[in-house]
Each structure stands twice: as C-alpha cells, then as structure tokens.
Amino acid sequence: MPLIAIFSIAATGGTEGWRHLLVNVLPRAGGQTLALLVMTGVTTAFFGIVTAWLVSAFQFPLRRLLSFALVLPLAIPSYIAAYAFGEFLDFTGPVQSAVRAVFGYQNIRDYWFPDIRSLGGAVLVLSSVLYPYVYLSARAAFGLQGRFATEAARTLGAGPLRIFLSVQLPMARPAIIIGLALVMMETLNDIGAVEYLGVRTLTFAIYETWLNRGNLAGATQIASVLVIVVAALIMTERRARSQQRFSAAKSTAMAQRFGLQKLSLSHGWVATVFCCLPVMLGFAIPVLVLGSYAAKRLGALADPKLLKALGHSLEVSVSAAFITLICGFIFAYVQRVNTSPVARSASRIGSLGYGIPGTVLAIGVLLPLAGFDNALDGFLRSHLNYSTGLLLSGTAFAIIYAHSVRFMTLAEGTIDAGFQKLSPHIDMAARTLGRTRSQTLIHVLLPNIRPAAITAALLVFIESLKELPATILLRPFNFNTLATLVYESASRSRVQDASIPALIIISAGLVPVILVSLSLDRQK
Image 1 (cartoon, rainbow, N blue to C red):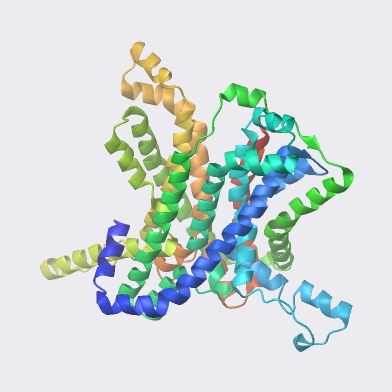
Image 2 (cartoon, rainbow, N blue to C red):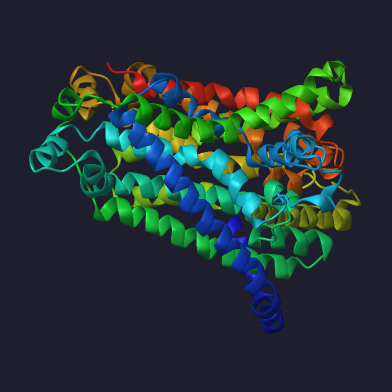
C-alpha cells in the first residue's frame, strides 16, 4: 500500500513537476547521494573486510577483545554519531583546542582544519557506524570456508596476502555484497546525520520538498526515484546470492577450520592499531563525548519530558515488535508448510519494507491513512453531523504501522532462520504420531522456535527505538520519542541536552550487539 500510494501521487505531479525534478533536484541531490553511497561503500568495505580477515586468520595482541569490540559501533545510530563528531571536532572541541594549545594559534584564521560538516564528514560518520554490517558478513564467510582451499594455495607457493586476494576474498564475495547492500540502504535511509552535516541527499530533498516547500507531489516524485534506486540495490544483492554459491559439508567446514597464523611482534601491533581505529571512531568517541555531557546532567533523568518521550518510545517499539513477531511468524511458517511460488512471493512482498527509506515510507503510510480519516470524517459529518477527527494519521498508530512495515524483514528473516534449523522430519514425525498440523505447531514447533522469536522481537524493538526519519514525519503534535528528542535538541545546537536520551538509545542497542558478538565465537 505505501508503494502504490507513492507512485499514484507522483503520477499526479504532471510533466512540469518531473521537468523541475530532472533539472533542479536530481543533478545536485542525486550527485550528492551517489557520491555518498560510493564513498561510504568503499570505506566500509575496506575496513569491514580487512578487520574481518585479520581477526579470522591471524593471532595478534588483543585480537579476542577486538573481535568483540569491532561490532560495538552497530549500537550507535548514525545521527547520534554525527552530533558527537560535530562536538568532538568543533572549534571549541578537544581536538581543535589541543591543536591551538600545541601550536600557539589564537583563532580559526591562523590554521586550517577539515570541516566535519561536509560530504567527507558524512562519509566518516556513516562509515564509522555502518562498517560492522560488512565486518559481520565477511567474518562469517571467512570462518566457514574451512582450510582446504587455503592449504592448497599454500602448497602452490602463495603467501597470506595472495591467498586472501585470490582465494578467500572471491569465495566471500556474495556475503560481502549482502553487507554492502545493507550499508547502502542504511545510508539512503539516514536523514539526521546528513542534515546536521550539510549534505543534501535525495532523502533530505524529500523531507525539504514536503515540509518546507509544501510540495507533496514533488516529494513523492523524488521518493519514487529513491524507491527505484533501492530496488536496484536489492536486485543486485539477490543476484549476488543466486549467481555465486560456495559451500561445503557443514561438518567438514567446521572440523577443518584453519588455525590462526601468529604474526610477528611488529606486524601484530600494526594489526592491533588498525583494528582499534574503527572502534575508536565508531564507538569510543560518541560514547565519551555524550558521556561527558551526561555526567553533568544526571538530574535530567527525572525530567518529565524525558520520561514522557521514553514512554512513547516504549509504546511504539513494543507494539511494532509484537506486530512484526506475529506477522513474521506467519510468513515464515507459511513458507515452511507451503512451498508454492504464490506463498513465497507473498512473503517476499510482505517483507520488502526494510529496503524502503523511512522518509519514503512515511509518505506512503500517511497518504492512505489521511485519506481514510478524511473520508470517514466527511461521511459522518454529512450523515450524522459528527466529526471523528484524525483517527489513524493523527495518532501513534501511523508510526507503529510504518515501523512494522519497515522492520518486518528483521522479524521474518530471524524466525525463518530458526525454522531452517529444524528438520522437516520433526513435523512428519509428529504427524505420524497422531498430531494434527495445529497441534504440531503448538506443541512441537513453537517451543523449538522460541529463542529465534525472542531474538526477532528484541531486534525489532531496538531498531524501532532508534528509528528517526519515519518518526519525525509521522508523529502527532506534542509526541516525542527518544530519537526525536535527541533530534530536536541537536537541531537547536543543544547536543548537551540530547546526551542522556542518546545514551539510553545506545545502551538499548548494545544488547543485540553483544549477543551477536558472543554468537560469533560460540561453537556447539
């Protein structure tokens, strides 16, 4: 429904609107978006792949700690990282203050310092918090390759670097492309960081055209272009998975996992420093900056505004987690018991929302809901002289609906992965023992799928807690969540006031990150 609404409204904009879009908006915003995607993709690929290779193949100082710490930036929302970097690298921040103290400079005209509020700054911020998507995919791929191919390359005289470039990297390419696709989609979805850093992407152009210029048709036209870009990314990712498969028997791959190669002392510390760099940028700096501000404002924990925003965040996140858990379970279960193309296609369509940026999804959700509210209100006014007001579009229902659509993929994918671990013979055995299909579901499958269901609900809850673009555009008046409270404070250049709600979001985000980190090293 959101996609149909977007393309329907875009078609009403007329040829003049498309001409304006092609001449004035797409060249600049499209160019900035493409540059941001390419530069962020290259940077995240470099750091994600190299760090995954180092911790998977070599033994060096602090390797075990860093293999866990490299996932931590995933808990930092990009807009919070942008606010922290802005404070850290600002004229009054610790870095420039140290530069002036060391070299004796008096003001900004005495020296040059790179501006964080630029395209390069946006690449730095987004790469710092998004590289774990590539790191996780690459590390999982490297860990499951086994040692046979590597040992064969060594017997042919190849060194570690050539083995990595010629053997391990090509075999891990499909997994890496999946991680890069996630990075691209998260980059397209971002609005808080790019707005704060002064980068005018297509996502921000939608926000500006709709709210600042009041041009809904123009906003939907830009949104339709962005949907096409996202569809191309999704098709690229799926094509990478369908065209290239590298597999081995699971027991063989696990039993023949190659041992870690010990690096020399100097090379080992180089690897340690290299792996520490993204952790410092993506996690340590934001936490230290916000933590220093929060330590001076502990009294704000009892602020009614903060408590109210926390309540709204819990209301939206718990509701979205419950809805996606139920729907995601239905999608995954139907694919298990019904392998027809119709069922598989329906499940794929129902779980496409994660690829749609929040600003695009907000337009697609708001228009149908507002149309329904206005139609119902008009009907009751004319027949019963009674006004219903905005029942759906003017309440938290719109936010919950948008979050449920956007994060359905997380729930469905996690539960489906849990079902994949259960042999279909379990269902058959229960049926041969006299259980009906519903009894098999309730007494056999549900108890076994419980860990995956809890994980799915937890992931959706955390992602919903962090979601900013859709929440900003759909929230009713006087309705703040923790994410919008952080955004409002930062927009008024009061990052200090945003420190406590930002740290609450980060603390919640650490829970699934820690679980993922622990699962990487767990072997059963």
